[in-house]
Length: 121
Length: 111
Image 1 (tube, rainbow over the protein chains, first blue to last red):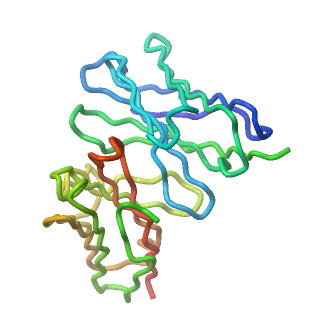
Image 2 (cartoon, rainbow over the protein chains, first blue to last red):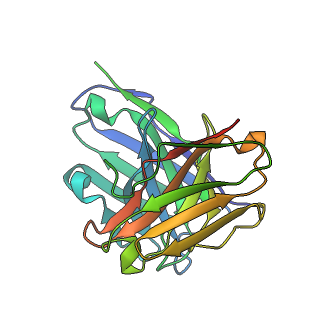
């Protein structure tokens, strides 16, 4: 069965770099069309898509955050890593990773439980 | 302000029908991009309810249905049940932003 799990720090200081890892099972990021997304959700607000990495190593980013984000994968270890630089209290949110199973579609059928990241000094 | 506009709240009595709208533009829904709908219970991750405008993943009851017309989409829930109380989000892709977009969310209350 498909599962995803986010891991990383629960608390980061302003200006620090956040590194989050998504570890997944039940599918392979080497399969044609497979993609993994990072999505965040500030408390009480709507989700916001951050980035995506595809089976063929293509990377896509939210244009408004592009300069602060870097996504990478290790398909052999079934993991995807997101780095976000220069963290700010406004980046406090629950961060989710989610699978998109087909190219030319943008839906996410499986999500991790999320990790709450608080940015505070 | 979300690119996809949803009403902040809708409500209905048990057994009745509720409809949630999602209004976009010619850059997203109107450009032909599919609309998805997610249900989110407090403290949990969003759950995919509808994909590709009208399709239900396995395990989603047929009380949930989606439609799309022009620059808008709708989620209909029939036979409202207490455990349908949740936040609902629409999602699509925007050509100008070159990325996935979400609606602002609608809180469904079952009276």
